Length: 381
Image (cartoon, rainbow, N blue to C red; front, side):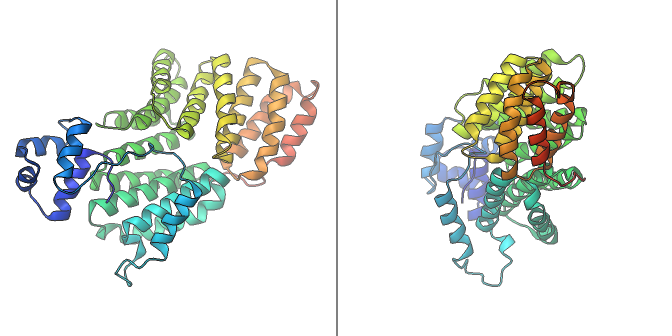
């Protein structure tokens, strides 16, 4: 059983062994008050003490990359095989009641989105939502609740990228509800992050900021989640007149988080840069977006296309037409590898924004190439 925080570990041990707080306290050699406070997130402890205490009940602390780091292909295939082909001992059971199986479905959907974009995965995501809806009332146990929250979070991101914002918000709320039931604090923050994304995409800046703040109000979050929620808050505020100083503070706070994995650091730089572009910090935004697009392509063609599109808009706003034309040619080459309503929408925005320079050297050809590669599907909610 994998859990992400010490409070979640204590709750999982009590659930697994049917122990009271007093029984767990006796096994750990601590007071019941300590167990009560730590399990509710009211008290923290050092990593060394956590390792020592958990070892007394047969648990160990395992260090792993923080959230949103892509899974290596061989590691993913091994995990998938273990849940698909190895019987769980309950041959007639619904596989969506198996937490390991559900988490592997979530990983599979994340990989597909990173590589292809959300549009090809819409039917798959909606299928998962339908199956979860059928069993949600009888889901028991924190581990399964956390796994379903993870799956619904990934479905939310697929639907969001495909332009299905109505479905995405509904699914994000299911992810949040399951995380609350499973006492999964990081899962709750993750769901708030997703809901903030969806509302921002819809232009509902007030609700987007409110969701980000709710996430930041939770305790014991990993650094990557704190960075992401600050980035969401900064981008929401950057779109609101008179909130530039608050937006800049939140964005700088997000960029200042250290210890992120390579993928997460590249994505954070690109996402923060979008907010900086909204604040007219064009040089910094252009530098970060270019770096993010170049670094992240090895993991996600989708993210590379997104950051290229954002960089083009930023350089056009700054009046650097020649550089924008060069990046438009790069984006045109990237588009056939992904199927994303958001990327498609960005192409339309670029074509509109660049129309005034259509006669500039190299711009006509760049515009024609980009228009020719634009995906044919339309956005829907």
